[in-house]
Image (cartoon, rainbow, N blue to C red; front, side):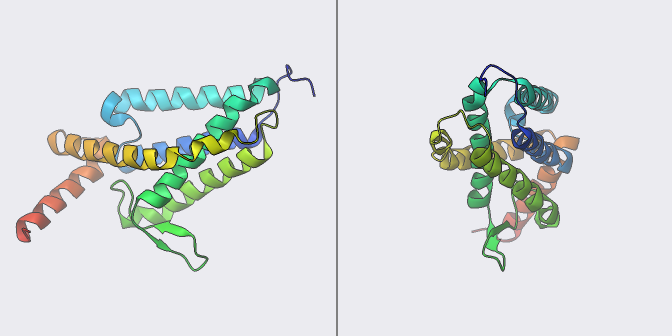
Length: 193
């Protein structure tokens, strides 16, 4: 295959869309999205939309010599899903896989929707890592494994910042965190430790 000719990367494109779906689900649910505590909701959503569109188009048109870039993108998406599944409260299903019971303030009611979103994007990313981007070094995706604990720390830090913002400035995009912050405050007032 000519490494200068554009190629299709359907699994990478699906991973890109599923990862954006995960981020926008969080925003629509009222807990923010990655980077919103730093950039604000409009700028973060715009950045996510532009980044998703750019990656989506590039994955379908960039030549094979760019496979390493997409291998890294896919493996970072996979690392983010693993970080969610290892860094937040969970239980094991009958199949032995982790199932989140809460994550980033979404609460138990939204977990039946959020868990499948995570598993779809994680499965797509794993498939892309294994089956696409054949001109990338095979060990390149392993470099993202050390990102998992760093992403857990980053997710928790972002969640703390978002809760602080929700308490000070309640809005549509952080409404669930405002309710969570109030209930935690009331619980602490009733049961001081």
